[in-house]
Image 1 (cartoon, rainbow, N blue to C red):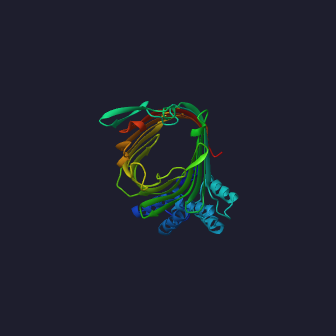
Image 2: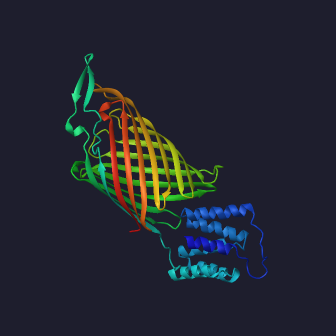
Image 3: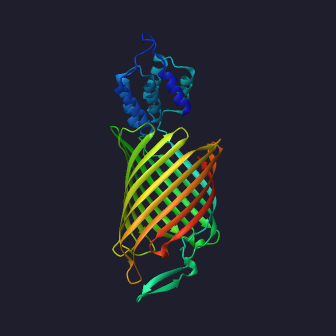
Length: 411
C-alpha cells in the first residue's frame, strides 16, 4: 500500500506528453470530490463503485494520471485483463511515468489480470489468564428476604460464591471477499478452558456476511451474523444478529467521524426455558483518528423484549463505551477502555420470593499494553476490572482478570 500511494503521488505530479502545459490547472472542486469519493469507495473495498467513479473522473479530466493508475489496477484485480492492459498502455505512453510506476505495472501484469483475486485475512490469538471470579459468584455470602414483617438471612451455597481459576484461551478469525464490490464473509471462533472449573469452560462460533454501500455522500455497512455458544461442553445459546452502520455526511472537523448504528439480536437458550428474547439497539458513535492516537465514544439505547414468562419480564437500558488507543514509548502501544451497561426490568423478578424489580449496572474498566514482536505478531497484556451493581444483592458480583496473549496476523 505504501508503494502504491507513493506511485500515485509521483504519477499525479507528471504532465502529459506532447502539447500539455508544464503546470496544468488545478481540477475544479466537484472533480476533486469525485476523486475523493472513488478513493473512499476503494478504501471500503467497493472496487466496482470505485472503478465507475474513476472512469467519470477520467471522462471529465483526461489528464488525471492518478485516476488512470487506480482504475487500471482495479480492473486488473477484477480480472478484466483487456481493459487493464488498455489503461496500462495509456499510462505508459501518455504520462511518461517514472521507474517506480513502471515496476508497479509490470508487477500487476506478472501477477495476472485474467481473474478476480479475492482478498483474505486471518488472525490467531493464544492466551493465558487468571480470573478471580469465573462463575460470577455473589459479592455477599448471604441473601436477606423479608418475611412476616421480619428479615431472614439465607446463606449461599459454595457454588454461588466467587471461584478463582486460571485458564487458557484460543481465538481465530478468517475473512474473505465474496464479491468484487467489498462484501466479505467471515468466521470467528473463541474458546476458553479453565484449569479446574471445567463446568465453566466456554466456546463460541460465529459466521456472517458484511456488505458496504454508498448513497451519494452517505455510507452504509450491513452485517448479518449467526452464532452459537457452549458452556461446560454443552450447547447453551444461539444468536442471530442483524446490524447496520450509517455514516451521514456531517460537517465535522478533520479526523472526527460520526456513525449511527442500529441492530436486532435474537437470542435463544437451548437448556433454559422462558429466557429467549429479542434485543433492539440504537447507538451513536464519535471516533477520532490522527497520527498515533485513536479515540471513540458512543452512547446507545437498548430494548430487550423477553418471552412471556422470563423473570423480570422485558427491560430497557443504556450503554456507554469509551476507548482510547495511542503509542506510549518506542514500539509500545497502550489502550484504555470503559463500558457501562445498565438495565431496568419492568416486573418483579420472582414474585413471592424476590419481589424487587431488578435494576442492574455493569461497569467494566480495561487496560491493555501491546508490544509488536514482529511485523505480524504482538504480545498483549490486558487487565480488566468488572463491577456489577444491582438492587438484588444475590446478583451482585465483582471480578478482576489478567491475561497475557500472543497475536498473529495472517497465519
